[in-house]
Length: 195
Ligand SMILES: Nc1ncnc2c1ncn2[C@@H]1O[C@H](COP(=O)(O)OP(=O)(O)O)[C@@H](O)[C@H]1O
Ligand SMILES: [Mg+2]
Image (cartoon, rainbow, N blue to C red; front, top):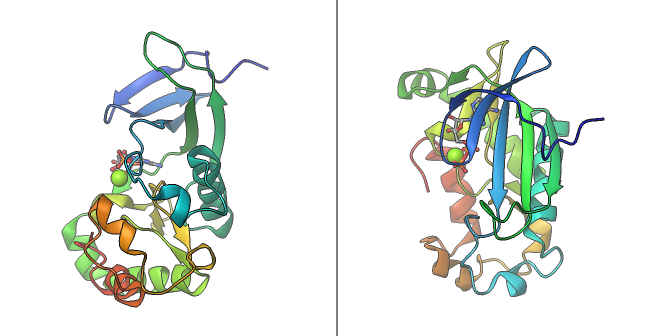
């Protein structure tokens, strides 16, 4: 088997510094590179206190990408932790290959089908899962026109948060809501613009 960390795929489009549309086995896929340094929680000083049950960023990330895939909320995924290439990375890095979704939601689609989106987010919350970074560009449509969510680095589950309200420490990362119920309510109702 070829090593997914060193194999070069045909890059069709660079979407951002870390996200690429690639062609692999005749199929379009997304390749996302995650480094600890660029992780949205890289500077959360209290990370170890808040998430004492599962502190490793890569393990957490892989866990939530796999879970969202399994639950049908996210893209099908494949992940690999790679050794650093010192020219470009100072640490190991995580590569996630995932199903390519052809359509990013527009404000119009969101407005039109908002009930479906709210239902999806409520279902997620009922399972004790909180996305943490919901806004328009993290919603997609799959080939069949079903709503999907992407970008799970900031996900967490209710069972790992010891207390409600949301730990004050999260303010370090700019969370303005300290009340977990209000935060979840926000994800459900202000899902297009929130956070
Ligand atoms: N599975 C996917 N299918 C199609 N486009 C995607 C997919 N994943 C990410 N993208 C595109 O790449 C952008 C950035 O990806 P995302 O995972 O949200 O990274 P970031 O953490 O930088 O926000 C998305 O807004 C979307 O346009
Ligand atoms: Mg995003």
